[in-house]
Amino acid sequence: MSNLPASNTPRKTTHKHLLTAVVATLISATSLSAHAGSLLGLITDKNGNPVADGVLYAIPLDTPPPAAKAAETLSISQENYLFLPYVTVIRSGSSVRFFNRDPHDHHIKSFSPAKAIDLRVNSKKEDVPQVLFDKTGEVALVCYFHDWMRGFISVVDTPYFAKTDKTGNALLNSLPPGKYEVKAWVPKMIGEPLSQTVQLAATDAVSSKFQLSFVPVAPPKPVTPKKKSESTY
Ligand SMILES: [Cu+2]
Image 1 (cartoon, protein in one colour):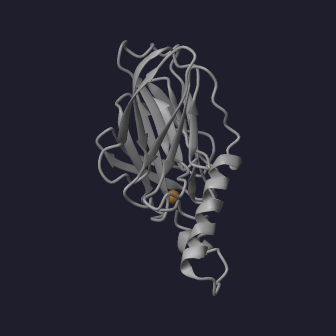
Image 2: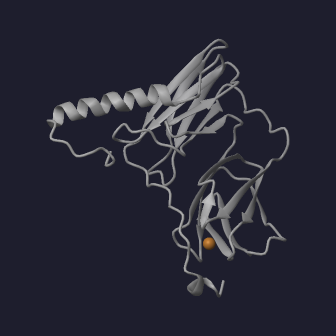
């Protein structure tokens, strides 16, 4: 809350106003609305502030998750020397194409158990590499050339997943009735994803709250490398 102006207001009052403001933001700012068979999840940090770019997913416990209709191919671009989107959630069996939209090469690396990657992506746009993600887990992307670049892929084995918006909310729609393990994950998660068991009836719209025990690291900001030092790439 460093964006709040300095004030001589006693601490207690400030805190109360702050809480009121945060609660009002949570209620009003999300455009998501829950319908029958839906689950609205909220992820907050240890201070109760909403966490964007979190991943919420629900694993059916009564039946196996429905099979994917077809293998999907998604895109992650390298743009302004960032991975965009910062966080991608995909079903296992999906592929990702890595587009380089910058004038320099990138070299994507992942040391994650779910997927090791060592991939030079050249700045010429003719060949766009495609990578299959067939194992569940979290994949952390870095760039060998630009050490501030960070990207994350959460590979899940369920069709019921969503990313939290800036209000910290994510909506899972069209869930068949049943029991689910609902998990919440954020980039650089300390420990395992948070987990709750939820029972959902056909007419239910359920909401779940997940509070992290830490404050997640903010995504990197766009950086324009100096032309000369980068010219060899
Ligand atoms: Cu790079």
